[in-house]
Image (cartoon, rainbow over all chains, first blue to last red):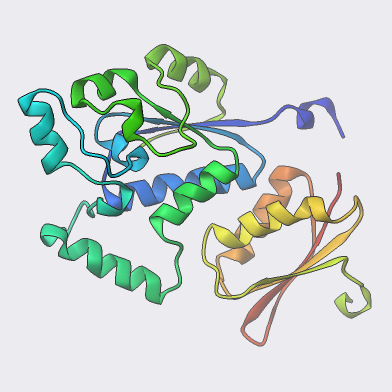
Length: 162
Length: 80
């Protein structure tokens, strides 16, 4: 095999959305990339942090606690970006996907971790939203900033912003 | 044709949807020796595009991809 084949291709995804459908797309791309032999890095910022959350309550300040209550819960609580209907949409899409035998969002995320995809939370978003590292699931990488993300992106042949 | 070839591994990908057929093939390619063959059967029509693309990207070889009785049968050879 020629030399160029030996170096692993890289892919970087910035996940800003916490919407069910967009997280779905992000994890399908990430697991697909890992399967195609790419080194995949995902950065979760702002609403996207939901994808990494466990169910522990969060928030220190009054606003933080409010956010923790109103935007609480883990990845299974993410709503579709359209037809949310106050939680009905999540249930409906869940049913439709299950009947088509599509993998669940949480299964895709866990598969991503199994395949070695790096899941990095954004430190600044964690501070703003008052989501400490303890509010994330196991397997999440240490928090990073935009510098780390850009250094990864610079080396990546494929990049996504979701 | 494909009837003469003895695969080293059979993969049942029936019922799985994108991206899982491709993911399963990639997870199992290391389970056959270099030069070894996986025979995979999928029901997702998307796999007809995805598995050859995966092979091209990873430097492996799809020896055949055929539709047989509504299923998609792949012979994938591990090249490296």
